[in-house]
Length: 295
Figure (cartoon, rainbow, N blue to C red):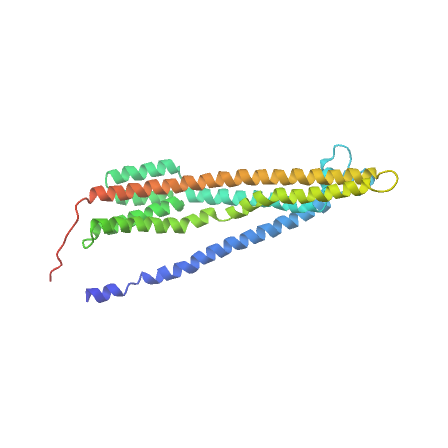
């Protein structure tokens, strides 16, 4: 009878329902990325046309003329149609950097990671597993979720009387690895967008540079006196696109490296806490337990 009851596990149903929940999170994150990119492009076009291209920034009130001396809005507008694309990339770097900062802040939890791991190790040293779990509940975040999963498995294996010690240790280690595999993708979400922007922003800027230089040489190639206005506009377009592309790429590289280092720090904390859990279990349950199951 006990074996029959053990087969019908009600906990199996929530496990199958967890997959759609994870897919919903991933889907909502993808929708956010698409919405953020579209919104950034719309804002960039509006800024380019109605702010940078306003007649007050140009001689004679016409954006076809040269910009007023010292008016950088007009200078940026002269970068041409590639400027809205570069502004979109710049805004995307800002948006996704803020989003990653908020996500990693929640993943870290309410307190310092170093303090949290130190407290967990202190609780494990005195075999206070319940207190360690309570600390995870207070900390919250991805690191605390992984550590709590390992601690819950620790308690389960401590009550288990029909498994070898090595099997128990492997079960705890597997639980920590599975929990880590569930948490890490959310930490790295949208980082690929930042890394992609870091790569292509300079290339898009170079496209604008080439288009600007084509305009400049076209002005020089005209018969008679060269078109000074066309030459100046072409050079401005080339330099503005180069500057915007390099600036966006540099910002994206800095953001990507910063968030990657933060994720590595969280991963290291998870590994450190997981090692402490396994080491404590091995020390506290050093002897292999053998039990005869007789009726």
